[in-house]
Image (cartoon, rainbow, N blue to C red; front, side, top):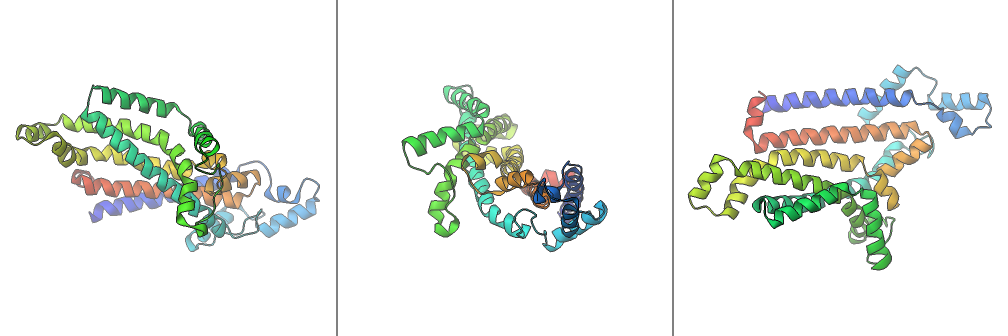
Length: 316
């Protein structure tokens, strides 16, 4: 297991280094000048140059890259050009919304998808299976921002059970905060659960055809006991793969839904920072999201080895 973890850690570090280089270079070649945007179009060249020197934009790119990486390792992410606030404070403030939103959306996705996928597999080629597959196809076709608008119209405008947007903050209590995140999480979960349900169904059906399942059924084990005791664990590897990718996507892809519900999350911070040419915030936020994706994939690899020892053995 130690060799397996060591190889995965080396891959994790190499991926993070490569991601940092790509993120830095991509933002470096973007047109525009942060100092010019902050000073305005009527600012004198001398004032723009002075601000660029103050922000460190006049230093060589390689020197700025090393300084940025050193800041990432020490937790010093610099000062936002637009907000004049430490980037770490901005990011942590927005993560207190984005991470719970992604966790809640992933929880709803897992509950809906696993229940629907197992139900469909247990009733293969029957009415329940056809109904679940038809519903999942509709779910895949629905854009999450359009579904978010429908949820607002139904639950906020007509029924008035939830607010149409905004976030009260965790200091107002856990229940009001979760209530504000429920509709956004549901709008994110509808597409993800539709995809995961189809994959769960396929994985369970594949395991149901294995010899050990037929042997268990021949020994008199009930279908329910066989499904939950023998099939589900062996079918979870492809399901966990997709769940890991989906959670990473939920962390990085909430910009549109946060805009629909007017949530002050990390996605809206990135969008606003791009508009303000606040590259230091954009760079750190994108790198943080990339790191989250890589770490989630690392956790998925470890779960592989825990669920199926053959994965670990084949990698040693």
